[in-house]
Length: 129
Image (cartoon, rainbow, N blue to C red; front, side, top):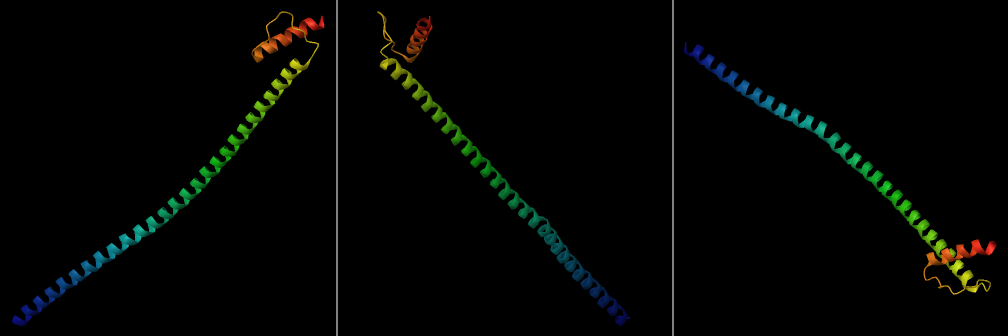
């Protein structure tokens, strides 16, 4: 009876030990699988994030450079237009001052360009009739 009871005790200890080893192995496998799936999910996600950041950064930089070139060209055109207007104004004033046929009869000399243009238009209208 003792041997039989002792055998049952050894068998039950063996079964408990076997269950404990299996549970530890299961936990270890489960931990490994969770870690593996996290790595499988996170590595591509991180790579995708880095690639999309680089691409969007490249696109934004290109758009900024394009806008910068556009703004510089617009500024250049505006400066050229201003210089052309200044040239036309100076040419008109020079013509007005150097033309001996223009006679001012008791009139006030224009002090602004607008007054000059009005006077010039007045002289054109009455000079042609």
